[in-house]
Image (tube, rainbow, N blue to C red):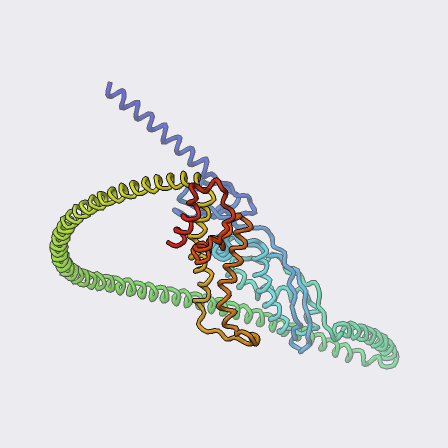
Amino acid sequence: MLEFLGSYLGVIIGIIVVILLLVILASGYVKSPPDTAFIISGLRKKTIIGKASIKIPFLERLDKLSLKLIPIDVKTSTAVPTADYINIQVDAAVNVKISSDPGRLAMAAENFLNQNTEYIGRVAREVLEGNMREIVGRMKLEEMVSDRQKFAELVKENAMPDLAAMGLDIISFNVQNFSDNNGVIDDLGIDNISQIKKKAAIAKAEADKEIAVAKAEADRQANDAKINSDREIAIKNNELDIQKAELKKNADVKQAEADAAYQIQEEQQRKTIEITTAEANIAKQEKEIIIKQRMAEVAEKALDAEVRKKAEADKYARQQKAEAELYERQKNAEAKKFEVQQEAEAQKSRAEAERFTREQEAQGIRMVGDAEAEAIRAKGVAEAEAMEKKAEAYQKYTGAAVAEMMIKVLPEVAGKIAEPLAQIDKITIIGGGSDNSGVDNVAGNVTTVMAKLFESMKETTGIDLGEIVKANTYDAKVNRNIHVTGVSEGDVIGGEIVKNIIEDSAQ
């Protein structure tokens, strides 16, 4: 059973592995068209053009590089002087592309990976323009105008090493136009026309001359033939020299290109060595910085440990001191609390004693108040009984009682009338008449007011107080000359009302 389970588990694992491989193959399958280079990098470096391959997911990367033609319009931005010092401008149509050569393709991948064709064309245009200006400076205007193909080949040969170093190839180079602002090229055309006409005229003259010579001097034909033969030989020799010079020139150009390529390679190697040296120095400096950082960290940790140790010691000392102070404050607080409690208990005892004293005083005051209230009540009852008796008397003696009351208040009324005079500190009297002074007027003001009062009371109550007052005079006692008005006969009991009034008045 276990063997069956083991074999079954092995089959399942194998199926899972196969499925994973199929998934990896399906997700990493790439196919490159003929005009695009697929560059796989990561675990391996591989370039695919028009083929299919597998890219391992997550471990390898796929980049694309277009191999299509890149058309470039190359123009000299400013006028360039030729070898014969004539400023001209050149316009050329050039087609370049990324080279399919593995070495150049690798260089192109380093320079233009994931860049668009506009960027590549802009870089190539700058290189071609520089080389075209260089060739313009090396050739004469007439030579360039008469042999554009030669000019194009020279530019291609001069620019090819620079572009090859970037991974680019020149597919075609066609000169579109030569132009100048001074009309020199147009003048060259006019000069050629003149030269052609001149040659035609000379040829005609030569023909006429030959005819004349043939007729006149037949014997000179042999000499002329010899001269022509020598001329032809010289021309051929000249052409041979020119061809030799051209071959030497081409050889010099090739040698110069080789020397330039060697210098470029040497410069690249020097640049690589300098970069490697600079990187090594940078790495060394980085290591030194890391070592210094580690040393600083160690010093910092040592200093931190020392400071922490000292801080902990200070903290322990402060903590012990704080605990001692806290213990002392607690003891002082407990002592103070005990004193406060004792004081509070003493105050409580004093308050209880004072409360008891006040309760006793309040009880005595309450008893006194009860006695006073009882006395006031008894007095009120007595006064009420007296008033009741008096009211009953008033009911019996109506006119006499009113007269008695009015007589009793006369002294108080007179005092109230004279009270303003008592408040006067100084009086200044002006005038006063010839018979009496102003002082008499002031002094008589009280009696005048009293007389007015008696008349008002007589009119309102019918009782003549003046007659009642006169009842105690000599004339009243002897002659009985008194007439009391306002008291009815019903008020006279046994003829004693007037007597009582007089006695009351006298009292």
